[in-house]
Length: 176
Image (cartoon, rainbow, N blue to C red):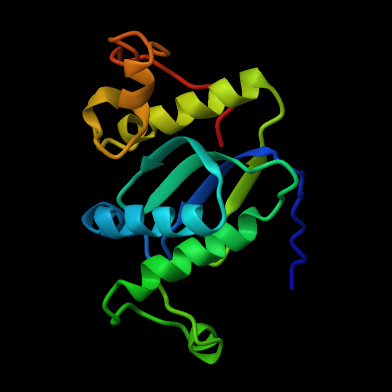
């Protein structure tokens, strides 16, 4: 068994990738976007954090969070978010014997990708990666065209120019 080690830094900013267990032909996250939003609100109300950027794709999501000073527990927040969302979904998904033994649903992958944001350039690169993701995966022709993203908030704040990501040769370097 692999021993996964997580880095914990007080009040840090993190980039995350979280996937559904069944990614093939699965649009659960966008089909249940209201429940997902409720799940984020549920967790944020009990254990505050800032969502700096986010994109919800049909079967995975990327986001950047900043935790409060003195707080390191992003894993607990993901556990609560996943369980709150899962409780709102009707049962019936494929469930492995190991999940049944642990009384787990088969909605989310158990693990998630966490990357500590180390500086402004790293933050900017990951925000761009998040906002470009729907285009990269063929779900939208431009970042502006994907509704389940913080891109339009960034656009309104003047962070991006109106035509950001509209050219076909746009490439992000350094994203996960």
